[in-house]
Image (cartoon, rainbow, N blue to C red; front, top):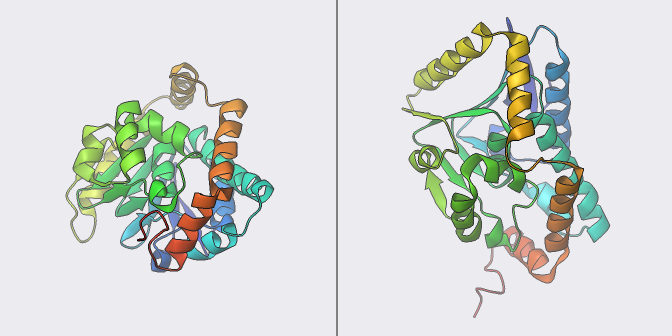
Length: 266
């Protein structure tokens, strides 16, 4: 299985979903979101698959929304924003609830919605040169749709800082706050990264498949507030509100036009 946006391969009991648009830093579009959703749905249903790796090609893991998609969003009505955000929310839910354990193999920078991709996976391994940034407030937006997963992954205290400041933080900081589980040296061939991912895969595939599935469900069921339809709908409404707001539109337009937003002008 594969599209222009990603490939899906299988090596024994391990499926690998790889984002394949390095020229645009593996940024999201509505098409990419649909492809990722379909890929995780498909591999999650395969009886022979016991673990899934989410990877990417090029210098960036995922840079959030791509420019063409942002240009379209800039003119969306509120209802169109609700529908659009709902598709992103569904993609994240499908990754998070995938019945097979998932590992994010982070070989490069992760921005905005890409942070949600990493957070929705069960485990994350990053190279020490990777940077992370929840950049939404710089555009007059908020990381609403990804927030249930990101806050669970990094904790509320860290989210207060990085949601509000939009600071870039290092892989070492991501490890410190618990957002990623392992950080390895960034060698040219990513040998250390792949070795660590392989180590986790060995542990996952050595355990009882039924027990692993049950344990994953246990964590989802028990951990903090359930990510349910009400919470997901609240995040969809939140991002639609802010996208359709005056500052939200101004932030996106200023980014696309490569100028300072009105709140920084003058």
